[in-house]
Amino acid sequence: VVTTATERGPVGMTVNSFCSVSLNPPVVLFCVRHQSQLHEAFSAATVFAVNVLAEGQEALSQQFARPGYDRFGSVRWRPGVTRSPVLGGAHAVLECLTDRLLPAGDHDIVLGRVVAAHPLAPGRPLLFHSGRYGELADGG
Image (cartoon, rainbow, N blue to C red; front, side):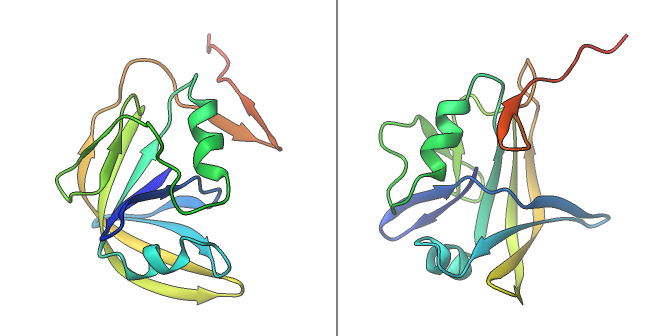
């Protein structure tokens, strides 16, 4: 779930396009659709946080995927070092300064420089693949 703070309050959305771009300096990207109700908020944002959800947070993933501007409801969160919302119980969080927006078809690619990383919480990350949630298999 990518989040940012706006004058209207916190906003966030579940994204399906997120990846690491560079390790030195640390840069990541996510994509936001032009038609999204949150496009304006994220295209104007100077900072954002990437909240990697933990196993068991499927409902939170679905809440931030639904249409509408206010998706926070009663979600527990705190402002991070960039003032972007850090979600309670997230497996890990990367806070970023927006570097640039690149138009790409019906989406914008948002590039951000990682300025803070919150450590991994115990447990495993939430996985979503081929239209459904899954679990990591135990290695061995």
